Image (spheres, rainbow, N blue to C red):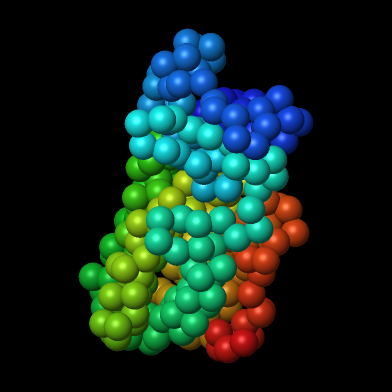
Length: 227
């Protein structure tokens, strides 16, 4: 999928496909790259998330720009929307989780981290990643935090998929998740908030590297998650 995406993105950015041009159909791309149509479909979704293409129902996929947008959209939310919200929700939630988590929460977080560290399938890893962040929000003891993360769950999954495909984030995320687990398990509120801040900062920097210097940047949060 990464190879298909890289080839199509390069062709668009070099002008092989100009704005307004229609990309070949899924079947044609599948035959050209000798991959399944599901792989092609995933690559086309990534192009759309980057703002390079748009899909028109019944007509196909068309080039709308020769460079990535500054603020990609994942589902109903832009990258900037997600980053701003996550800094003000997930950072304090991690701190509260360190103070208020139950043994069941810690067991679940431990299992999820261990499964992510051994998971090889990207789709399965993204699903585990979503559950990990939801569980931290739930462990905060504040149901509002859990509701917010549930609301943006699909958008976070789409963003995570893109970051893994184009930014090779999985290995680094596994390390960051392990640090979060250790801070929460040690009931260290400050360390947990710092670990989540560190994690979100790396998410932002990876996204910036993918699309170039962007408008996705949000004011840096301090250790307590305040801007």
